[in-house]
Length: 373
Image (tube, rainbow, N blue to C red):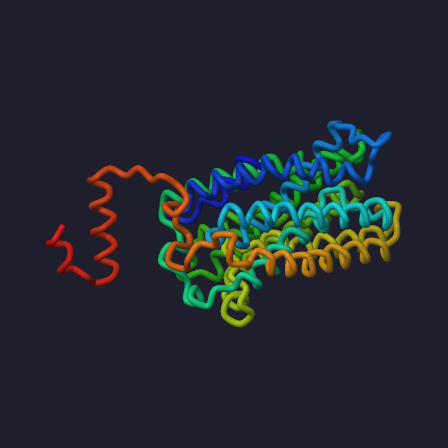
């Protein structure tokens, strides 16, 4: 999920595929190591950090928060900026995770709150601090083509298949783990149906939007995370997934443009719709489930855990964004955003280069320049 799922999900940008997959690998490899250290500091054994499968899984979880935030600033940051974000985000994440799991003792087995909501709103806060007025009306490379959307669907399908294992990874073996798998499966299945239906309703002539299908079909896995190991039953899981699919699809259609134009939050991948709102929905579902006695715990502590995750994310993301905005981190200029060529060697044959140039001139009505090629 971390290396293929998240990496390929972000390859939808037509000129940023190398960076989507390549920087995803770089950040994940670094975050796994830093996450193990940061979380291990809370559980020292005779002054040492003991490595175990459980701690490796938690380090993997911390990596997911960084990759979610990466999606919010995709195409607009340098590798150095992203590494700085990784260091600071995982440090803040480990504090919040310790507070939620050890002090508040809240239930969040699938991490709707501490990973998805935290990662999304941390990334949105960073994106707000890195706001680029020149990109207010979008950028020529901030979009997809047929084959880039197809590559992104590889990430979608990979995440969809393995999401039950993600939500059940740290559940108690036995009944709890079985419920986590089945609840996630039913939530995802219902989410796909609602995402397809709503996408068809809001798009022109009832057609489907690939952006919705790539992303909103996964929202059910996010939303059911907090109560994945609770006895909510298949129907309860399907309700959560169905609502998540609707909320996510409508968010991509209507809310993302509003965030960009009115609030100055340029959310490249729409993480607010896939991880942010479904993460909050999952937190609320967890509060309701605990209040109904589906799991031992306190509804008040569940609410405090959600508030803590959002608070740490927004404050931490704002501070991190201000640090990333310092001019010496090598932030790419506006004209080179969403373009691999600024950081990667791009090998294109002469024939393909000529066709790219022709298409470039056609898009800009500079037809006379074609005859000079």
